[in-house]
Length: 322
Image (cartoon, rainbow, N blue to C red; front, side, top):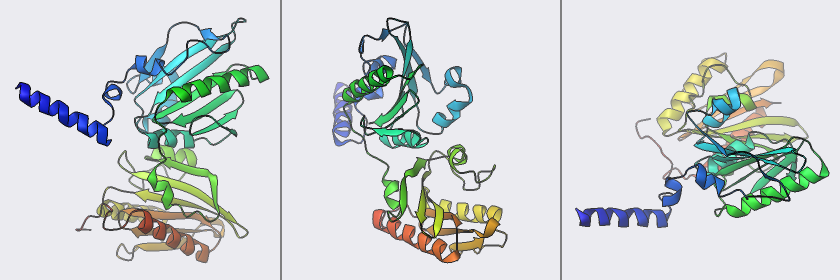
């Protein structure tokens, strides 16, 4: 028995080293682990009261309906700490454990308002609120009153927290499937579920794209002299799942019956704009608000080309029965 347990420990250690499992400390993550990312004091501001931790089970005790936005990602828990200065003015720090760097980026990308600042991997500041992501963490730092002093304190606190996070993290690979030409970078979003999509671009009440925790979606807006268009690249578990989503979406969105064997559908929608859908293995590409059919087709083809470049078909999760 001792030999078996020793072998298992050795196997787990190897998997951790290879990056196939999270570090052992991270696997047993707790509020105390998150608290170690926060300094005891910053520029004379000190903690007031005890830290609070909320998980997937009680997130609504902290943020009401907004919890749905976090639950649509790999959110595990958030630690909340309040700091005060000598005048008892509050500053709130929130550190969200999002499980993966992809989901830390995803929740960060859901709100692109603010001025870009250099904290963590990416950060935005505005109205006394500093938000950034690094590694598998998303951080919000909020001052009750916005002044030159509180901005400086928030920035200093953000830099300390970011320095305490040892892993940089990487953006989702799916983002590389968005063609770079004419892409508005600050429009880019990454998510998994319908609730996230409708917060960014309302499509329908029903889950017509069959999105769930196992799907990935990259969204971006394109703008040229001819106008603008919205592009979605959806990655499913299998090609069969992508085809089902293509059919379900087509029945719901297009007025004419689509042929699931063709893999491409384009139609003029309201206000003269065009929408299109294209199957590409385990991926479904969608274009909305295109000013003409030619631009719609061009964007669909460009996205499919990027998908083939980033996820070669032989490596993509293709279902041979599809």
